Image (cartoon, rainbow, N blue to C red; front, side, top):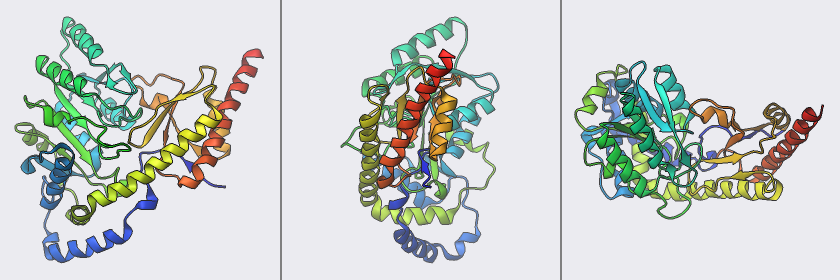
Length: 380
């Protein structure tokens, strides 16, 4: 039986550029040779930092400051370093009420006090609500340390923080003396032209924003090439907590060699493939459960968020979906308080596009079956 894995933020495996990376590997090894006996250092391979700057300039029309970029083992290490530097036990951290489960796990590990900010599924965090929350916290003499946000193709909802909200967010960070951690994992995965406004890092004039990025979501999670960008004094402060002697220079050199030549070409191919998969998911959902479910309509990214009927029996849904080997993620995993919400997240990039209608049809059957079961339980 096929395995329909709509779980995990993985890119499309069928557009993975194996041959191109083989060529890039040979180029990188010829270039670096015996220098690989040395440690890469905290900031990481220069060519990779140059690539991160080029990538940012491609979208934002300005480069990133090379000396303020540090390469990490995926964006999760970047978040670990950044958040671990500024958050102590009991500190208050603000984030969207729905956000990446990995970051929530890290913040809970750091013993942070999480405050969720309401959001909508198109324009992201409700900054007016954030302002009210900040005023209320101030009256309680609580000073938050950090605002964590994923403004582009947000995980799990796919929302894109609007330009007006970005400007308002920066103004509030200045007013309340807050750092913003901008997680831009999904910024280049666009299904329509120019869907994302200027980044918070670009708009920032008061040194409030630390930028986090990764190549995992456009290449492969196994490559483990992420980065953070922090202006002084924050860059030095973060590195005071780093002990790993740097990220693999060889892996960085291979990725840099490939993307410096093929970034636009690769994004065009893989984004088209992922967009087709997203469309296949939506079309199948519309054919089978449009009368009982609603879902987001992503303009990019890797995720689709589904609202299930309140009568859904989640345990039954899990069981029925598992019988057909259909995987998905529970909405509660992304809620800042882990509330048992009747929502699920689908990650659509990993399955083959030809298998998606079958897999989503099975999921729809499971959703309907969980309604019948819940009615039967209630009647009993």
